[in-house]
Image (cartoon, rainbow, N blue to C red):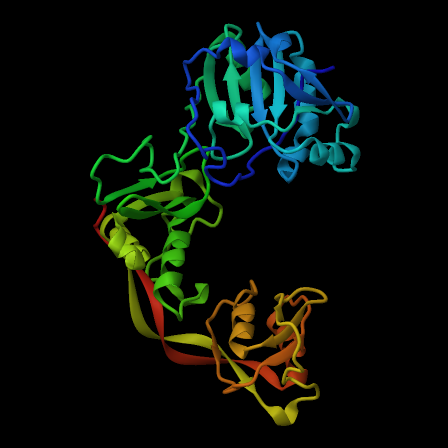
Length: 417
């Protein structure tokens, strides 16, 4: 059996998946215990599960790769991992681990999704290793040297021929990943005793994490957003604060030359915010977080009424050739996709679906004055002409206009600390 278990890159696991109870996790610099090598584990080999342990991997560089069958990028990288396993077969063992069940992994093994056929092997149904090497994201690599010392923990894209050679020569120099503990201040194992508030703002990607959540601990409530463009973070906060907000009602009053929008997700222009407040302020947590960003990010978000280009959704029943009023039935709203339906829904929900179309760059306002629920047959649309062609038979049309409108306007400031 070849000692490679393949996975891929850049797929996010649910944050804190393996932090459900007290775990004695290993850190970089620790030596793995003897039980790490001797504990029986279930290996899938040739599509069937056999019992074994890690003893046969002792004495070589060992790379543990945490993965899952739902990871499409993982699957695409399996042939390359198989190549690396063959290239370094005398010096390196690459062992993949998944908490997923034997049944689920077996189905994957036998399917067309498995690109390496019988070369595929994996430890399956694991919880112990996932707890021993805590991580917030998969793929997650653990690098263990021939003496059993944990030398590094990295993201999946660190698995390369160059890095393996560096690890073998003792020159691999990558920043280890930090595990982010649940309901705890960023980069800490537990909250300080008596903590009432805490805030932290970081520019630049933090490796190994990608998610956002509202958290709670004792008398505190908090929210954390990892590794996103500042525009995205402000948008999340604005949706909670302003009922009227949409991405089209976001305006910069400066030329974005410094990565505020960051559509290409450049690592140096990603931001993380960790904000905590007393629990009694939980109802205004996102408002307080936005205020904190305004005071420290170098940008200021403010609501201003300005004259802006809009689209108005209008209704002319005399022009309708199809019935718009609902016939009843189970409500459904599946957006603009082939074969999609919009059933027994308020017109406001249609406005939201229209604003989700990528080609809609201006705010969409409901000017129909409709009060009844509606039915429409929808399909994929690629431009304004196609959208109106879909709406017109129901007496609906999207008309360009201008209007004084509340907008979230972002300005640059000198507030950076």
